[in-house]
Length: 107
Image (cartoon, rainbow, N blue to C red; front, side, top):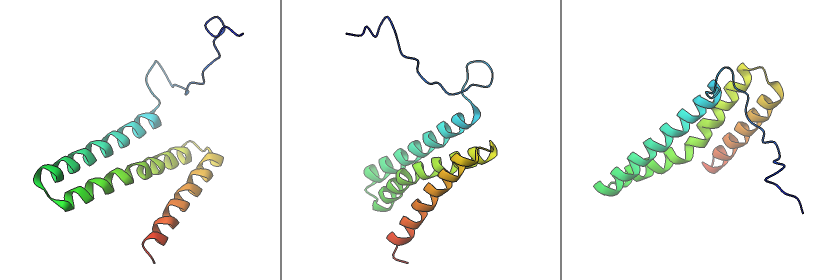
């Protein structure tokens, strides 16, 4: 039986530039996700309290597009960092998301 408390496995941690703050890309992703979630919550709550269906639809749409915005931010960050392999993978993911949206709209 292995004693995990005595021999902890190392945990991969993101690289940090200086000090103990998050790297700029991670901070930007955090801001994008937080703003998307807060905007969605405000729209959903307003739609529920005011009984306005368009606000509910916009709130759901905002919640659905927040991860896509994150993917865009990550792609730009990877391109700026010249991490070509992961940037290509990220662009591929955006292409799949875009094509699925195109097909879902029936065009």
